[in-house]
Length: 288
Ligand SMILES: [Zn+2]
Image (cartoon, rainbow, N blue to C red):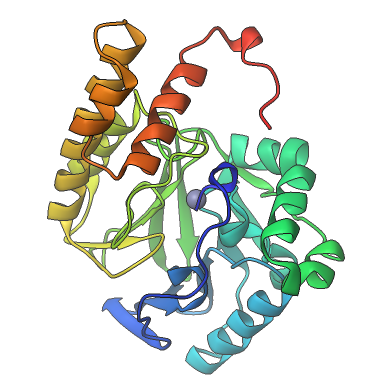
């Protein structure tokens, strides 16, 4: 989800609210709220959790669901990026170690309060929960790659470049053939560009395609395969080309919107983010 795009839609599409084994002892659970996927990787003596949901009540429900899946302790958590629906529930899983990209931690420290205010505005029913929430940034920081040992198995964490955000982390479980792609891939809805890097996202997805396993769990929506990454890389390539044309003055915004592979609102955000992210770093100023 993209914090800067306006309120993400909670609920909506049908969601299977049970753990689904997508690879050997690797599970995902799809929540109706935000159509969000979380992951659980079971090792011999511990379980690794991938993403923690949006606020305390949601995270506590997740913790209870995790306890129903396994009695193994959860000592390690991965945050795929700094958006609230993936990491605001961290506090409930303390004293676990939290893996995340270095900029995910920096973003939560510098802009977490602004994100909290936005989310409270979008979801007033959760305002009291959110207002009292301690935001817990990752403390196991990843720049490009890290290997997490989970009770005798390996989980590979990679930052493959900027895309949905500047801090997207992909978690691959090689022995199970499962890739948790975070919001670099979105199933059933257009990608979220609110904090995105539209000129670079396609290249990042091509790197992901080089590494991805047969089963791909997106940050939201149904489990997919490598073909969804290939399709979305193609769309992102087309969108990046349109962004470049508009930035160079060779095409109007209206022409680009007509040709875009996404709905107008999504494409308009992509064009705007391409403009902002292509400016020199000290002239972008604070974003609203
Ligand atoms: Zn997101």
